[in-house]
Image: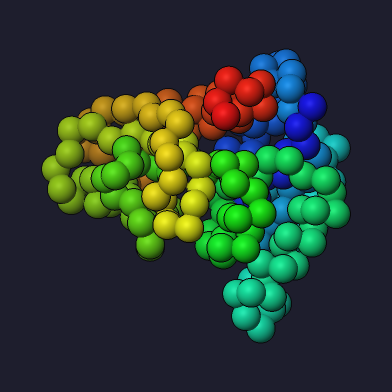
Length: 198
């Protein structure tokens, strides 16, 4: 069974989707054993506590350089015997050392259909704002492996979500989460854990 670490920066809705999926028995080959937050006090840490999952904070601002942050994060992951890393709204960029330590073992969920509206700075509401500004009729979410290029790793799963008349970035974000992110991420994690995706 693979030990999974989920990295979070906020409310942890994708973390909750993963925990719920695990509780339903949908990932028999993996278990979330650690939640790492990029800052203290985020609600995702409460979700971890309620689920009985160990958690810690590794904050970029506590370290003098990106390298020292990467080293601290790696130390935590290795210290817990983590096999698979899942980025679920984690807003700190992972450096090459972390990526190379977990080749094809880091997954990210992105709130757009990559290659649209992705790359540096495209997080939170921004991909939804960009899709609306462009007049898109469809958007969605993507789960991909993480490599050294921001949002540039191999795509595992994508799901399209309709953009409706009158949508705001906030309503669109909620629909993309509910219809795509919360379904795709648990499915992709289970597929990797079972060996279906190598």
